[in-house]
Amino acid sequence: MSPSSTSAASPFVPSDTILQRYAAVFTHFGLHGGAGIRPGETVRLLLPEFALPLYLPLQAAILKAGGNLVLDFKPNGSDRQLLEWGNDQQICFFLTEALRVSRDGRRSGDDPTGVLGADYLGLFSG
Image 1 (spheres, rainbow, N blue to C red):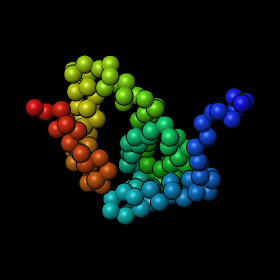
Image 2 (cartoon, rainbow, N blue to C red):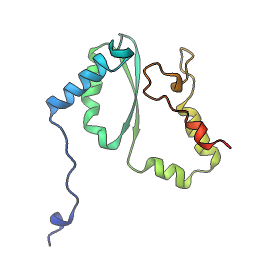
Image 3 (tube, one colour):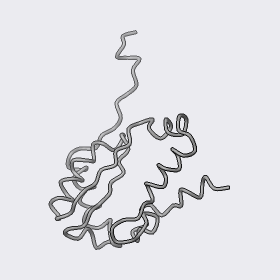
Image 4 (cartoon, helix red, strand yellow):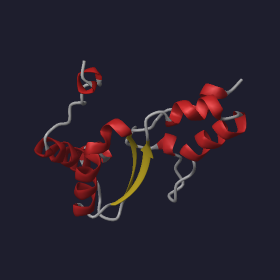
């Protein structure tokens, strides 16, 4: 067998048009209960590696709408590595940072869009 026939198949990547449409829906309807992003707002985007093709269309849509973008990129295996190699302090630090207080006083878990909405720290208590 040739090396190419034994390698894993390439993952499906939607066309640029489809990715741009997804980005437009997220930007214009996916925030604030369908009202979309407001100029000057900042969007924190948690992007796993498999969603990387969506990044540039999302960035373009957010910038065109007047928003700002903070990227939190998660390469494949990064969460597993944290859980396997991290001690309790490191794991709690990571989770605490994910829920830190934003400038307007809300924790990420209190996000009115419900995107995060999970109490991750509760997973490690008692």
